[in-house]
Length: 375
Ligand SMILES: *Cc1c(COP(=O)(O)O)cnc(C)c1O
Image 1 (cartoon, helix red, strand yellow):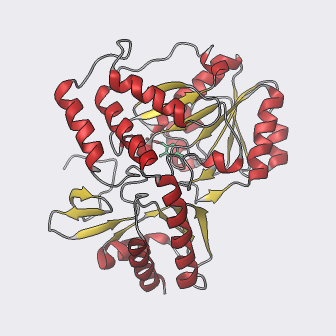
Image 2: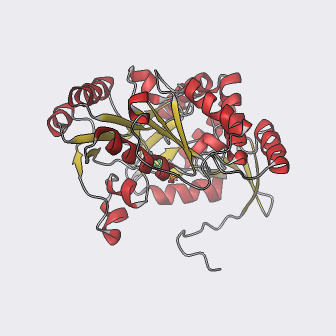
């Protein structure tokens, strides 16, 4: 094998359906993290498969300056589901590219360069997005990164007010940190950031790449806090696993966005997958279902594990369990002994990001498995 960037796990996955992944030896796994929030409507949802298959047969590529029905429909759908008056859509191929564009658009629209980011934030791994990511381990070997980034403690309203000034192009943050350990932000904090950016004429970029598309119990996490950003980024679950991201911006940003582009922007196949995914999310009221299932899951986790772990936190179906020892041993036991796949978020946090179509029986199975592994 010549792959070298990822260390691979001893489980070879062959197929997926709904909540389940099947390995080459026939073992079935419950997916509570292997898909990294990328399949909100479940693996290989029939509507997504159908829309994508049709599009593959008809046209696999045309450059984005030629209008295409699947892309035009997706522009409209995204503007429709976006919070507030965010109506302008830029399509790309991943989360980091969506943030990269967000940072460029904010600089072009404001004519300023300073970016304020947060401790423990994660925004991707290209040189610009990486510069706004907190963890040194991800950054050090690649420096120098894009300049002009100042970090403030996540959750501290005073510090962000002090950092945002008339040289600030944007503040970028996640409304609930994923990679950084499942750290929720308070409404008071997010509203303070909104106020500080408004007062300074800076853009507020909310990175909803992990929190969006129903994950936290509403289409976007910011809706629960009554905050509308100037720029919102989404990716991960947007194409049900096909590579597509989007940067959604208000008019004042779109009006002076500089010059940006990408060959695969608005590819018809990924647009068809994203359109079908959004259709299912809305038609089946999946964000509300995620809210209900999240309450159930967290309640059951608290009852079964509350005394054994440091904390259970999160929102909707974005759940973190802070354990007393390293999370990796638990994750291995969960996978190999209980056929449950989950994720870490830092050294001591188990992260659960199941498809949003899960049912109570899936929560029960995972809680039973966790209770055995952790106690
Ligand atoms: C995953 C993630 C990204 C990066 O997305 P990629 O598609 O891996 O480039 C950025 N921000 C957040 C919050 C994420 O969870």
